[in-house]
Amino acid sequence: MTQTTQFNLNHLSFRYAKREDTADISRLVNSAYRGDSSRVGWTTEADLIDGARTNENEIRELIVAKDSMLFLCLYKQ
Image (cartoon, rainbow, N blue to C red; front, top):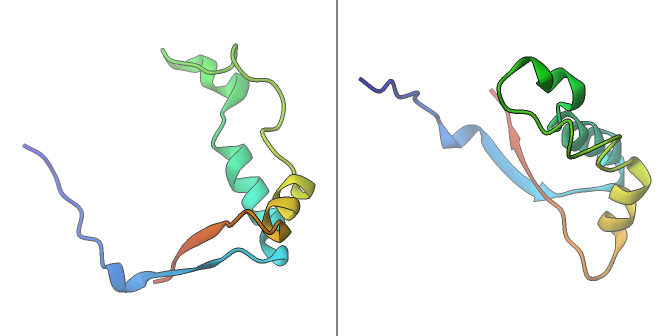
């Protein structure tokens, strides 16, 4: 039997990323890669990646670039 979770889309908002978002975005992207902590499971990306995936400067450059757009989805209860 599959359990479903009710999700209210009214709690979502969307907006373009701002320069003030760079630290949060960088932390989020880098946290998605588990590194050595993934070795406890049967799948791991630790042998494929090393170090941070991005940094605040790279994110900031993407936000201000004319040919780039970062769009955020925010959840508020």
